[in-house]
Image (cartoon, rainbow, N blue to C red; front, side, top):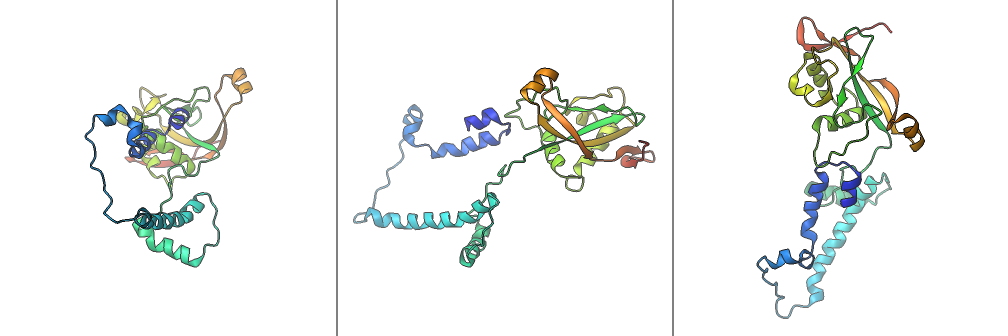
Length: 253
């Protein structure tokens, strides 16, 4: 957990995992803290009971859960064998009880870094970037250490970059508020290139980001190298007749 906290920004997820692991510690590991707590009553074995007999139900339960977890574990590794009918039937029958669950939080990590760059303009020719507080934007800005804070907007921007406007329709609402000059929304950003009044046009472009090599960083001072992939949105503007609505604008190349 300490290594993960030091090398990855997982917000408070890492801290929640640490808290869940605390009950796994034996009393002997807690040292002086445990000595201050009242001792727990001892569980006495019923007279005549044999230890091996009392452990059989727990052993059977452990084997049952182990076999049951084979299915979600293999799926998490993207390994989909032809399961025996009884095993698959058993897994599906017990699925509503959540006895065997895949750990889905970052179970599969992406191998690329798509990022959305948001830009505004007053003439649809000269564009200026909006800089976010935490997510990659300016290639010369070093990655920030954010834990345990969980920046909601920057976090959602990462998922939006992995999808599209159909999977993340909230992004258009975000663009609408930016064009309306909403102070609470603009306050979530690190830099507003239009401090006096909102721009007339807005567009979002999808870029592929990758870290620069040591040599590239030494020569250019850039932490990131980015390559344009495609337009994420068309050029957007407020509807003159309804300022709470967006319009896609055709512009000359």
